[in-house]
Amino acid sequence: CRPGFYKSAVGNAECSKCPPHSVSHHEGALYCACEKNYYRAGEDPASMACTRPPSAPRNVISVINETSVILDWSWPEDTGGRRDLFFTVLCKRCQGPPSAPRNVISVINETSVILDWSWPEDTGGRRDLFFTVLNVRFLPWASGLRNTTVTVTDLLAHTNYTFQVEAQNGVSGQAPALRKYAAVTITTNQAEDTGGRRDLFFTVLCKRCQAPSPVTVIRKESTSRNSISLSWLEPERPNGIILDYEVKYYEKQEQETSYTILRARACNVMLSGLKADTAYLLQFRARTAAGYGASSRSFEIETSPDCEEGKKESSVATANPNIPTRKDTLATVTDPSQAVHEFAKELDASCIAIDKVVGVGEFGEVCSGRLKLPSKKEMCVAIKMLKAGYTDQQRRDFLAEASIMGQFDHPNIIRLEGVVTR
Image (cartoon, rainbow, N blue to C red; front, top):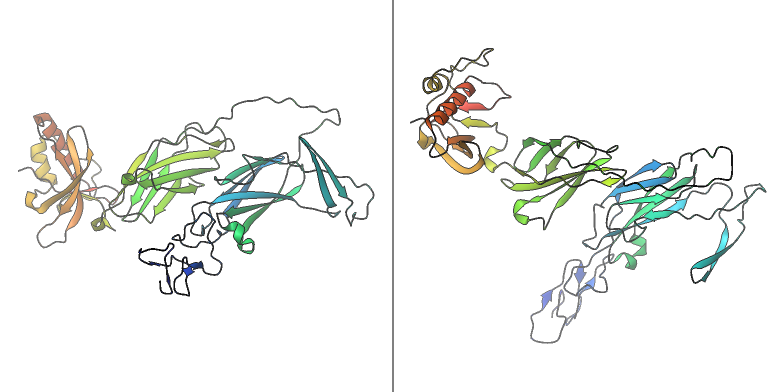
C-alpha cells in the first residue's frame, strides 16, 4: 500500500484509505498512526477513526439541602468522536487555615482500614487543632456515571466544597494533559439545632419520595421547515419544586433508534435543526429533588413542508372583498346553502391539489394541499372535506361552519379562502 493507505492483514485484499485523524507515511503500512492529540483505545480496530478525550461538561448547577447537594450538568460540546462517554465527580473540601495534613497512609485489614498522617506544616498559628476524616457519599456513585446528575451526602455544615466533574471516554487515559473538567464551589448550610446537647441520636424513617406526575397537556406555538416551538402545562401533581424538564424527541420513522434530549427550565422550548415535512414524536418529563417523574405519552408533531415557510395558514381559497374585517354580531345562518355563497367565494375544484390527510373529524377530513388561482401565486392551504356517505344534516352543519368562518378576516383567525359546493 502506498502512503496514506494501509492493509491490516497480508493477502489479496485491497488497500484502505487511512481513517480520519490518522496517517501512514511509508509503503506497506499495516495500520495508520493517529495524528497528534488523537488516540485509539486498545479494543478499537485499525479501521476506526482516531479520537480524542471529550471537552469539559457544561452548565454545572448545584441544589443545596443543608449538608447534601445535587449536582447536575450538560453533556460536553465535543465528545471526542466517541460514544463510550462517562462522567467522574471529584469532591474537594476547600481548605482554610490550617494547611492539609501530610503523609497520609493506610493499613487495610479485610473489612477495616487504619489511617495515619502527619501534622500539617502550617497550623494557622493556633494550638486547638483537630482532624476530620471526610466520608462523603455519592449516589449512585462517583465514577463511571452514564447520567448527568449525582447526589452527594454526608457533607459537613458550614463548609466550602469544590466539585470537579470530568467527562471521559475510551481514550482519556492515554492523554492526561488533555483531560478537562468543570468545577463548582458550594457552601453547605446550617445543620439542625442540637438543642445544646451532645447526647444526640437519630431515627431514620423511610418514605417513598414522590416524583412529579407526567406532563399531559402541550401546545404547539408555531412550526417552520426546520423548527417547532412548544409550550406545556406543569404536571397536575408536581410533588415539589420542579427543577427542570426533559424533552426527548426523534423522527417517527426512526422508532427511537436515534433521539435527542433537551432540558428546559421553563415550560417552553424551541426545537431547531429539524427536517422539513417530517413527523416527530416527543416525550416530556419533569424533575424535582426526588428525581425524574414518569415520561409523558408520545406527542406527534410535524414540521412544515417547504412551501409553507413563512406563510400564514389559510383554509381553502382567496378572500371575498366584501367580507367584513370583523362583525361584532355574526349573521344568523338559517339556510347554510344560501349563506355560504353570501360570505364565501365559490372555487373551481381544478384549482386545488391535495397532498395528504393530516386529520380526521366526526364527519370530515382535513388535508394539506395547494391552491392556485388564475394570475396569483400558489399558496399552501388546509382543506376540509366531507367524508363519503355524509347525511343531509352533516352537509348543512358543514356549510353552516363555512358560513360563520367566512364572516371573519382577522390576523389571529384562520382565513376562509373559499368553498367548493358543486
